[in-house]
Amino acid sequence: MSFSRDQNLENKGCPECGSTLECIRQGGSLVHRCHSASCGWGAVTSYLPPILRDGGRYILRVPATCDLSPSQWIVLNRKFTGSIVELRRLVAEAGLRVVEGSALEIWNESGSLRKASIPMEIEPPYPFDFDRPEMAFGPPDGPVDGPS
Image (tube, rainbow, N blue to C red; front, side):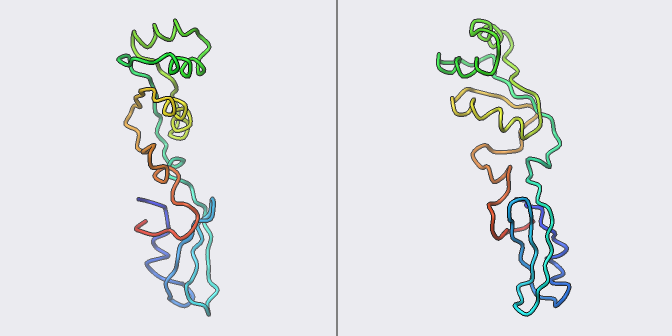
């Protein structure tokens, strides 16, 4: 998993005393600091989560082959201004294009569909696993472990 640490800093050690550096995530920042108690060296860089670094464009759609329950049709209808009858026709004919957007927009727009268990397809293949948000948004605040 990649967390965009500055591997050059870690591989070289502290520029002041040569001790090991640690990397800590604090919100939108990565803090690199020296482990040595006698050294006060540190550096702060921006942290941009993987989902925001992804420059791809994705299309989220409901496939034509899906069979939805009445409650699922209601959830889907909330995203559109047409009637449920019109939505049924669109889905039956060719599937329904819900949104085209960035990786973050797809993540956000898919939330209500996932919650309602509405089948969906994303093209091109979506690189983030909805069941593992740390893949998209990075590690929680605290020490960043593992290879960068």
